[in-house]
Image (tube, rainbow, N blue to C red; front, side):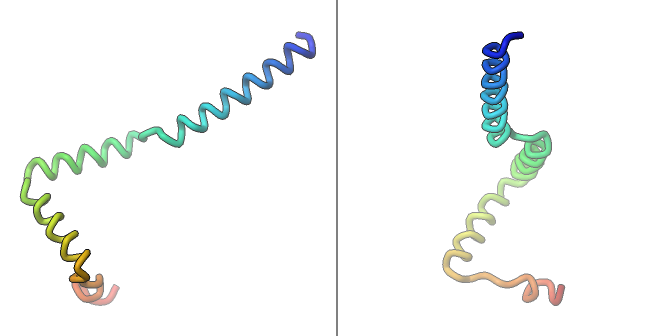
Length: 75
């Protein structure tokens, strides 16, 4: 392989490496998918949970929230 071909190959490999980095940052892992499926399963078995989450978020926005220690005692 001549020098020009070697240089071209190096440039192409660097480009592939950069593309793989971009793909990796937007990839979803198997663990992410499993966690999402568990969440969907919980929400589908109890649709009231969504309403409770919405209510909790609204209370939090209004400053109506409690610390961990207030709810469960000392850590």
